[in-house]
Amino acid sequence: MAGAIIENMSTKKLVIMGVTLLLFQALAFMVGGLIAPSPTTAVHYLATKCVDKIKHQEESKWFMPWGHDQCEKIRTFDEAVAKRIEANNIVFAIHIPLPQKEMSPWFQFMLVILQFDIAFKMYNQIDDGAMASLDVRLAYRDDTVSDWTEMAHSFELRKLSCNFTTIKNFENEGRYYECDLLPFMEIGSVAHKYYLLNIRLPVNERRKVNVGIGEIKDIRLVSIHQNGGFTKVWFAMKTFLTPSILIIMIWYWRRIMLMSRPPVLLEKVILALGISMTFINIPVEWFSIGFNWTWMLLFGDIRQGIFYSMLLSFWIIFCGEHLMDQTERNRFSVYWKQVGPIVFGSFCLFIFDMCERGVQLTNPFYSIWASDVGTELAMAFIIVAGICACLYFLFLCFMVFQVFRNISGKRTSLPAMSKGLIFRFKFLMLVTLTCAAMTVIFFIISQVNEGHWHWGEHTVQVNSAFFTGIYGMWNLYVFAIMFLYAPSHKRYGDERSSGQCITDGEEGETVKRGGGVETSKVMKTIHLLTSVTSGEKKRF
Image (cartoon, rainbow, N blue to C red; front, side, top):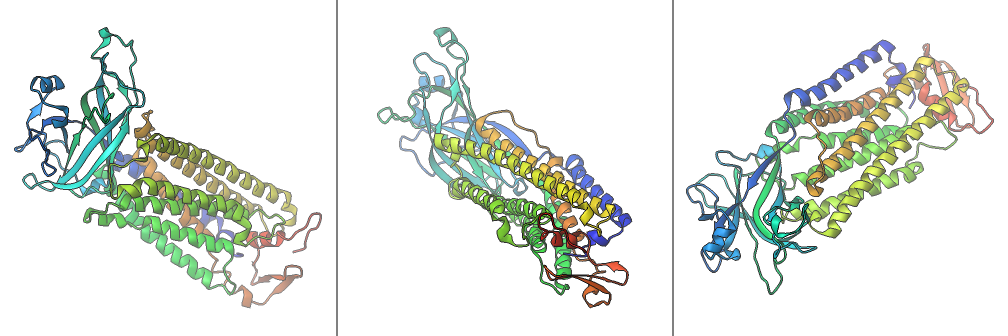
């Protein structure tokens, strides 16, 4: 890969390019910090207790908590007892959104979390391992007068995890348990203006259904969706960056094809990185504004997973191709031990995602967090993923350290490398390490933040600036790599130019000098040094 732009571009032009990219990076953070609102919004709802007077429940009947067709309501369960209303005839109704508001496709997704308000009673306590059985229905409509259309209906089980922090005696009856949040529903598209949830807690003492779950007073929901303002900023960034990366990728590969030799491994991997960046950039989300594509969340996860695996593999190969050791590289098979675990981990991520969001395409109430086994697997996945990300970064730091050590150890054998050229190379390695660190931090925080609503710990506040900044950093890094490692226009005529040739007999490579321009600098020297044996140095 001799004669790359990074080798031949003047220091002044490189500085200008670096400052320009730095300004764009600052702009990416500022767009999120100053223009975009917070990524998500959480809205709290209190379920309304409706009374179903019909003895044999009608599946087609919907209960509205307010409006012109609102249901008959009760305020407390004591009122239900006084009116001799059975528990099976009580329906908890929640209308999303709140009155005088509308949902929008710009919200992209909707995640709903469930919480029970359970009062302590000496003769009606929560049993260990108690399971709440829910009969849940979801409907939608796009105006306030149309009939509701059923979207999903399911019978779900949720394990109660509640603590009573005071002494359990008659004096403390009526105090509330502290119960963990429960996963309830997730849909990958908000294509309709209004949504209605009807929840029943059917009781069957003979079958032990909803027995031993305490005295439930209320049901509260938390609806989380992406902010429409953030979605517009995010789409605008994708729309702007897609042609930028696509153009530089086409330009880069065209220059590679102009070379008379076949592309080397590093050049192919850089192209693959550009393709994966373009794949994640393409703003197909625009179609979700006009179409009810519930699979967009899953598709987005798949795109991000492909990019993660390509980016992590690229950094391994990028550092490995510059190690200047005795190993014969420039072959993908050399890196199977490092790249293999990355591919395997990405495949596990895909399987884990399919186990939840794949099932949610047909049943939005399904959650892998609903069972003990699923919760343990999900928690283990998040912990292991964080540990693996940290170990990967440490391994990458070790590889960069090896590169720096080898350069310093063989500096006397590199007459073609000026101090300025060595500095450029080391600086790019440090930039790579910085991008890797930010990516690992972003991955860990994203996993922790996603799991917050499931296990009830304190959330990590990730604002819009972090999202747009990291996304902009990936694009700028890929842009810089493809530009700097593209063949310089000064090199195209080298193989046809006249001049002094010095042939390396063992490798069969030729180093030429023509027109006063050195044709072999950093990359050529590195490829020649890979065949240097211990105690032996070659002449250039």
